[in-house]
Amino acid sequence: MAKRERAASAEALQRSDRALSFAPTALDPLPPVAELLAARGPALHWSLGERSIAHGSAQQAWFEQLRSVTAGRWQRAPGPPADGAPLRLFEGNELRAEFIVSAQQVWWVSPAHGAWRALLSDAEAAQLQALAARW
Image (cartoon, rainbow, N blue to C red; front, top):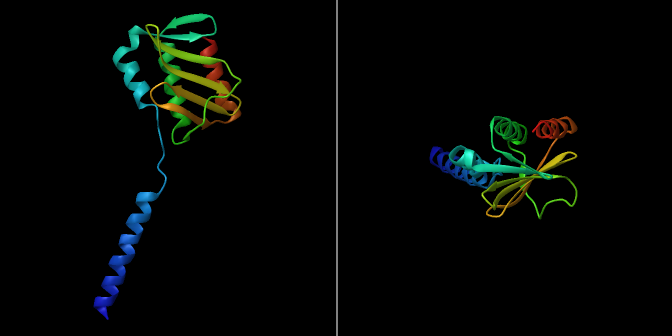
């Protein structure tokens, strides 16, 4: 009897381990952007409307706030929305990333990593938009 119980217990544990391996994980697609900002920050610039802004402390603070409010919320998306003013990150003339904050969501579009979307509260979206407006 004890042998059967151990075998059943081991089998249940294996099923549990397999189930955990298929469980969804919290995705954070932004590490490549964080690495780029850390390595090349002074060589980068942001495009906001008609303005071009060198990457500095205000832009880094915006990015850190973005990472904070979107942690664990990212999902792959079919493409960016038609509305919203994009914040574009360039290295020289090369587009490296694009962020679009709109009502209750933020989009990250990367030529190398595709499109991602994270849901936001109205307050979080407003805060990100207000921080970018101060640039």
